Length: 310
Image (cartoon, rainbow, N blue to C red; front, side, top):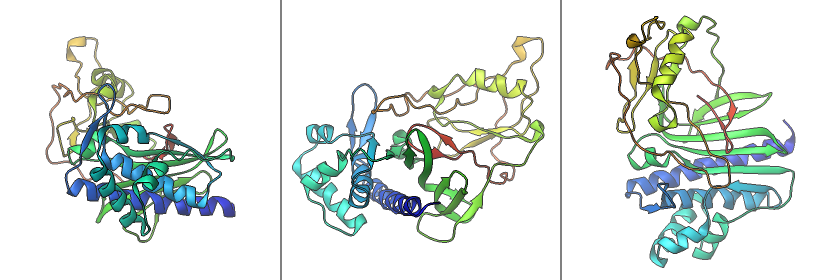
């Protein structure tokens, strides 16, 4: 990595860590929900997280461009000075600096300059999961032109092994890494070396509205992916492990339904969080005693706002 990219990734990691701390502090006090247009939820943590991230980016890379999800106008419309003052104080606490209400609003709306690097920020990816005490991520990616060059995910509620709360980051040509979100040694993660489709396990979305569960499950069966799949409905706090399905037969009545679809993000500056909370129907047996989890597998993919691992 170049010196500039090393500095950017360091800032990215520190910003995501601080924003994740803010999100958890807001959650501990009960996240205040503010409705956006349509059915899109947004919380005070979304705005605070974005203010933390963009405040740190603007301080160190003021000429870099920014693509972020939230805007201060909505916060002004749906909150009072007391709420905004409390949020500014929380931003100051997690960043170790000062933050007035005016600073808070300016940081949320920071758009950067015309520099060659673009920061793409989703302050909370998975607002509904955040609200119900489930998984969410603070997601920040870095683009050079149209090419992603770095990305960080903060997952404060995700446990891997003995580590509760993780930071996952990656740089093309360097690798992908996971480390405790509270700080600690990083270890390399990589794409699984499993080559036999019969041993591949499929991970499903927690939001069934992201795709047609029946189609996904039929595709898994048709491809012969026999390691089973793991997903949860919008109302489940614990993922459910489901066994592998048999290959489809000539009798369509034997087809089973019930996987969760892949996550998607809508194009545009304001992306839509998860829509709907329907539960899948399935005739497949559900095991409440999951098998030993597989080794961590990572797949780096650009989802408009950040590199992500699945």
